[in-house]
Amino acid sequence: EGIEWSPVQFFDNLVVCKLIEGARPPGVLAFADEETIMPKGTDESLLSKLEARLSGHGHFRVEKAAGGALRGDFTIVHYAGEVSYSCRGLLEKNRDTLFRDLVELCAQSSCPLIRELLPPAATKSPRAAGGGGQGARPATA
Image 1 (cartoon, rainbow, N blue to C red):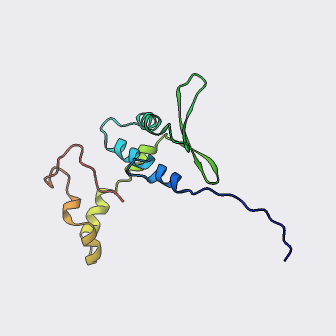
Image 2: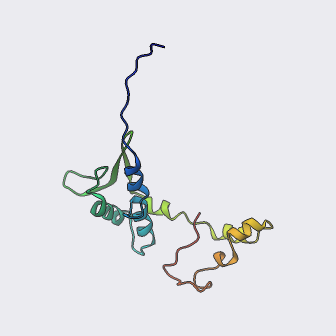
Image 3: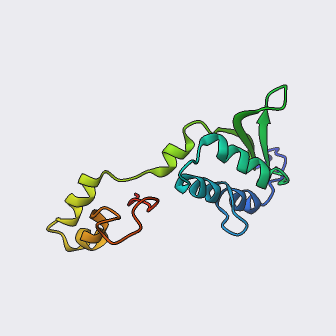
């Protein structure tokens, strides 16, 4: 049809997907999950861990202030360009816990499928359920 165009070169984005979602070696989300369950885990400790473990990755960098201090942001180079992410509030968002009342309501549902998804053991506190108590992870969405 005579339309002029020029091909665009894209790289295989799998390396970026593994950087974000990887389990072995761990990626950004694995480190966020790990830091979420740490009793003293903070957004700052997550950022420090990301810098220590991922700074050698060609598609990852931690943003620093002029004096070399961590700013609270990291950047991932995606296929479409650089995208910056803020660590502020990231661990709280990652917890994504369900409200206990909602879990209990679902466990008492008249729908068998809903009851099976959230059995009564999931609605009890970790200590009452025979779990480890402190440090046990709550039900998540």
